[in-house]
Image (cartoon, rainbow, N blue to C red; front, side):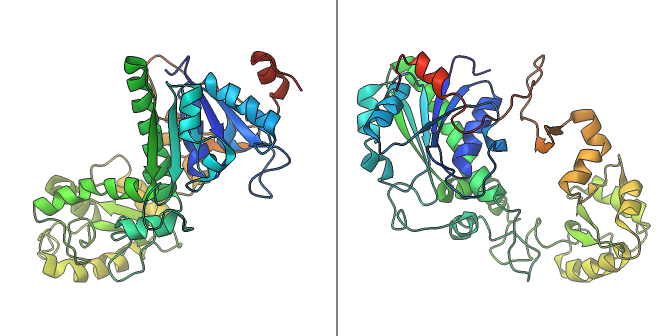
Length: 362
């Protein structure tokens, strides 16, 4: 879908490479400028999954000749991705003003945790810190438990990489119309806060409370995960009355007068305890089989390996294994277009090829 779009990625960590991988999955040509002499993080594999579909050139951006090569690449690009702390690209001589002088149409994508200009812009941080300060972590647990979310998904990927992708694509569309590029300031703090707006819409209806355990999505017995007899877990979230009725029927609880009071928040704690005991009486796969294909909104909590072996994946092929590396296939999908996986390059694999295209040599 993005044929003809060229992205230059300056090697970084986490959300930046993920955003570039996503654009490559969507058909863009992505050239990653790897650090000459080794990975940013020691111990990283020679061929990173996050580099799939990209080409690689290894440069030392403190070397004037290599810096010139990078600038020559930027001159050919639709967009650039960098994930350094504010000011680092400027010190390297690759800040937005210089890059826009080289290529006025360039969309300059900046990925940080705290944003380019904030009280914390130069402070260190990680996924969990950004989403805790933005408010996105607040509902990330059962009431009374310490908040926990799936590692990197809410912050680095959801609030960071995907917002950077959206910003870059918007900037590219604008540049195609106007001839002028822009700077995309993608902060995980901002994106993770923005992701809360679906929940905040519930506050308008009185269904989201600032007090844990009193909201439709974090308090009820029908919106949480339960431990099973074998140590596995199942998720339950039958919000709508018709789905809740199906749940009660399959659990043998349709006639129970307390369980029939779905929205009586005074009973939620007691009914949660009763369901905990009931689910603990059978192994996870018993419950998975009981609810499979129903409208009760119950699903087993699977590991990635289990998800890959599940019948859903047999149909969708969302999980694949390529060169002994388990990985998720691109999303979303486009009608009539299949996905042919492209390998991840080794660092600097395309040095000569890219330099020849730029008509440079060393």
